[in-house]
Amino acid sequence: MSETDRTEEYAASETRGGARFRRSLLAFLLVPMLALGTAVGAGIVGLGRFEYTYEDRIFPGVVVWGTDLSGLTRDAARSALQANLSYPDEVALTFIDPGTGQRWSATPGQLGMTFDAEATAVNAFEVGRSGSVWEGLLARIDAVRNSRQLSPVVHLDWGKTISFLEELAEEITQPPVDASVMVTGVGLETAAEQIGRQMSVEDAFEKVSVLLESYGEGEIELVIEETGPAVTDSAVAEVVARAQQLTGGPITLFVPGRTLESDPEPRVLGREELEGMLVLELDSDVSP
Figure 1: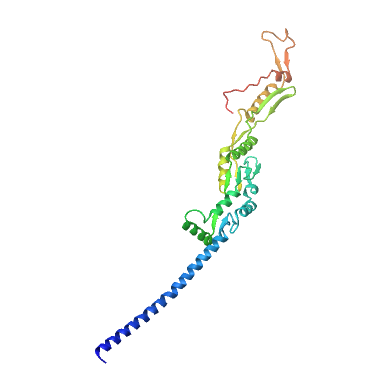
Figure 2: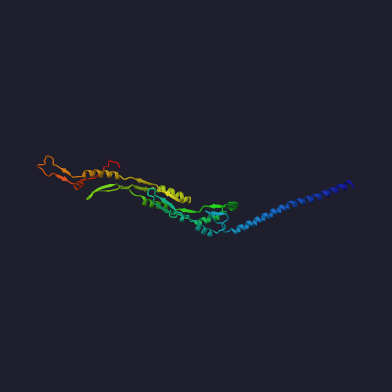
C-alpha cells in the first residue's frame, strides 16, 4: 500500500471517529436536556394547575390570628373570621377603683373597637397577588413554606372610648364636702366631712389604648385624685368641744353697779339659752 493510500485511510478513520464522538456527546447532552425540559414542563403544568385551583381562593399558608384561611374563598374566609375572632365582643377589660375596690368591666366593642372581617378576608386573598409577577410568586412560595401571619383589620372609635371613660368618671367623681356643726333644738348636731374624688380620664385612656391596640386583656387600675374639704372633722370636733365648755352649765349674769340687795334675782342662763346664743362661723384664716 502506497503512502497516499495510507493517508486517505487514516483520514477516513479520523472522520468516522469524530462522527462517533459527536454522536456520543449529543447523546450525553440530550439526556439531561430532555430531563430538564420534562421537569420544566411538569413545573409549568403544575403551576398552571395550582393557579387554576386557587384562582378565586386564598393561597395556602395564609393565617389570620390563628385562623388558617388556606383554600377558602373570600366569603368563606369572612365567615370563618367572624366565627373565630371574638375579641371585640367577648374579652373583658376590668377597671378598678383602688380606693374602694369597686370594679367595672367592658368589652373592647363597648370601648369602640369593631372587627372588619370583610377587609381582613380581602387582605388575605391579596397575599401572592399584589406586586409584580415575580413578587407574587415569591410571596406564594413564602406563605407555603413559612406561613404568612396577618393581623385582623379593626377600627377604633376613640370618641366612644372617651365617652365610656367620662361616664365612669362621672360615677366615681364626688366633690369635697365640709364637715359642719349646727345648733338644733336638741343640742349640737354634726355632719362628717367627705373627701373629694376625681378620676383621671387621660390616664385611663392611655392604658386602655395600649390594651386595645395590642389586642390585650386584663385589669386597669384607675388613678383617683383626692381633694380634702375646707372644714375637716377635727376642726368641727374642736368647735364642739369649746361650745360644750361654754354651754356645759348655767351662767349667772349680774348687772354692773347693782348689788344682790338691790337686784336679789340675777339673770341665770341655762344650757338651752346658751346654745341659742352660739354663733358658729368659719375662720377663713385658719387652714384645714
